[in-house]
Length: 226
Image (tube, rainbow, N blue to C red; front, side, top):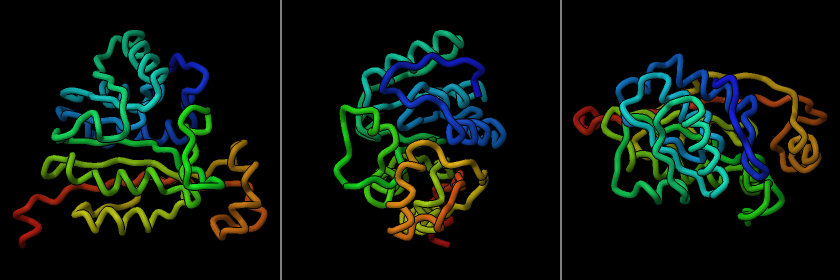
């Protein structure tokens, strides 16, 4: 992960999930020579990891104007090329396909399925089960991946890694968990611990959570036919 990244109020600052996703991008070699799409780029940390790893091109998307500005600044700071767009997930790249799609979506289970649009909580709120953005990425991923292309996505295990894998497989993207780390609960997760426990999303008195990186690849049509 880049040693220094600029940020701004309301823009998600790189944390453990950002670090494990960037590490997977760099170690996997999946970005090399490929056109890469980074969804919910924030400061651009995952997009920059792809650029450093030899991507042919990197397109980054975020709904936040500030995030778009910050990602562009960080690209200049690190002398790496990013094409950054403001928009909702795949909307700015409609009709395009990529060799690698990366994502660190908001995934913290929240009190409602109505997601905030103009508060810092939009960086982490993922709906009642934390899956509103995760599921949209699963559902849209195949349409934006080249045959043999790969999706790398990180989220908390409280959202259900198996649910993500099942949903991806239903769209022709068989996958697996390629990295998992255990971290102390952060401030938002701690504040919502009782709610998560009551919904059966977390173990009683949990003080840690697992983060998972899921890798899924689009099966070429010929292989699917076989």
